[in-house]
Structures are given as C-alpha cells and as structure tokens.
Length: 381
Image 1 (cartoon, helix red, strand yellow):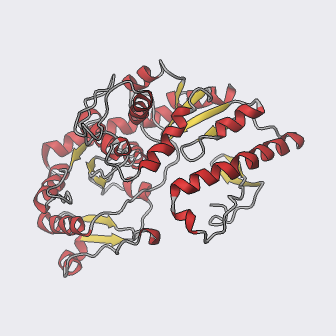
Image 2: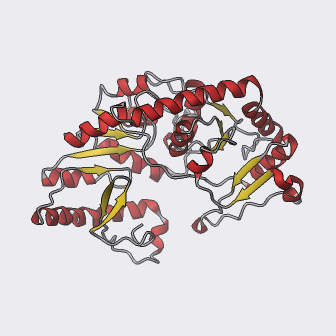
Image 3: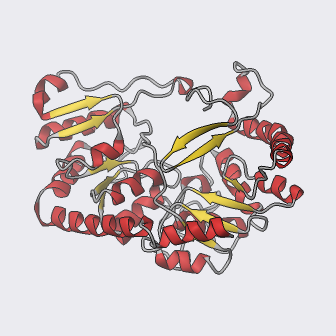
C-alpha cells in the first residue's frame, strides 16, 4: 500500500480535517515469493514478522515521546491485541461487516446455535434479534462447503481473542441495526462508528451471467452505467465478454466502464437503483446515498446483507439465486428486477425507504449523532 500510494514511513498524510501517519514493516518474503498467492500461509507469515516489528515500532514511539495509546486489530492482524497486551496498552477490534454478521460469527465461534454442517448442510439458522437465515443466507465462509476455509479461520481469529480488546468498533450505525447491536452488547462493548470511509468493491461474475444481464438490459431498454472491472491476474480468469453486437444495439442508452468513482455515481440524480453484490462497504455507500439496490450476492457476508436489504431495511430487491449447477439467473428474471426497481409503486417504496436511511446515516455521523458520540467516547477512553 505504501509503495502504491508513494507513502514513506513516519510521513504525515492529510486526511479530512487532520493527518495520518503511516508505518510499514517487512513481511520477510521476496516480492515474487510464490507463497504470497496462498493467503493462509501469508497470514501466518504476517504474524511471525509482524509481532516483533510492531512491538519494536511502539517502543520506538515511546522513546520519541509519542506513545501509542491504543492498537486496533482487524481480520488480517488479530494478533495486534497480543502485542498490545504484552506492552500493557489497550486494544480495540475493528469489524468492517454488519453487526448481524458479527453476531453470526460470534455464535458460530462459541457454538451457541446450530449452523450448517457436512452431515446437515441445509439447516436454517435462527440467531437472537435477527430474521431467520436460510442455509444459503448464512455468511458463506461459515458453510461447510466453502472453498475459503482459510478466510473463515482468519476472521474467527478476532473472535478467539475477543477477551483482549476493550471494545469492538463496528462500521454500522445504531439506527440501522438497533436490535442486534443491543443484543450483542450483552457480550462485549460495541461502539457503532459508521458509515466510515468506503471504497468500491466489484467482485467477478461468470461470463454466462454477464450474458444474461446484457440481454435483460436490451430487453428492458433501461438506461444504464455498467462497471466491468477486469478480473485480477492472479485468479487466472478470462475477461468478461459481452454478447456480439451488444454495444451497437445499446447505442447511447448505456455506458460501460472499467472503473468509476462509486460514491460519485450513487449521488448523481439520474441513478434510480444500483445492482450490487452487496459487500458491506457498498451497502453502506448505497444507503448513505439514498439509492435502492438490486441485490445479487455471491459469497461471504453478501448473502446475509442481502437479507437485511430486502426484508429489514426494505430498500432492495433480491435477484434470484439462479438455476442449474452454475446458479445462473436467467435474463427474464434479471429484466423483471430492473423494471420493478425503476418503475411503478414498488420503485417508489424502495426509494422512499432508501431516502429515510440516507437521512438516518447523515444524522448518525453529524455532530452529536450516535456514531459521532461513540467515536468521541472511544477516543476519550
């Protein structure tokens, strides 16, 4: 990150109304080390290299009369709380998904309710103060069939050390998830501090699904902006290919880009709805901008977020789970969602609810709002 942003250690970088100082440490591997492609191995290496490096960094700050008052961990560095404990300074946990997903991982880690297993993979999950989650609406890393078990291990690393941080900072706001925030506060001190600064997230889609979406856009005649980010090279996936003649048929009715500033797009008055995989960052951005969502979740927390968008926040439509082995949603169903989210009474209801959440988000981060108060309390403590 430092190299990509031309940042040097101990340099003050202006951010908002203040400044941030970035520090980095060497992970001990060469840039071309093939083990970097294996996140489970790399996470272990980060801990081996990071613990002594961050400990030395903090001691250096003490010698410079700039003592560190708190360490904040995340799923990639849960061991930061170990470093803080060894040096006698407080630590906090940063959770960048919803409080609902926090509750799911907490209950899974502590075995408080039954979750899908290899012998019973299709059981539904009922968590306190939450709607019933069908087996495919549970965060996908918690399912026995997940190919990303190492990510489950990484995320659960925070929960195995939950006795060390003095509080949990969650990127949500009190008014958005009041029941589950109140319930989970019985187990640990939770401070809702969102919406925080966010970045766009556009996961990969299958080529077949891209075809169905393209055909649906042609069938409805709806004007659109479609961001098609190329897949990361390390995944070895082919570039998305549009159906032959698609651009010619669309003409001036649509625009396709490799990237766009998501928040800037969402705040444009021409936007009627946003089709999203429903990563939590995108959910908060969309709610904060007052835009309805067509939910098209793929994995991780996205499937659980979609439940909340449709059934709790009532700002979204759920695109079907798809047909057949590959779970492709046909163009007819995609087109139905496009029309329903942009025209008629349903579209008005979605927009009305989205605008209510926009106002609630603005009030939460305004001076004296719930997230503003929680952040100030955290700093004071």
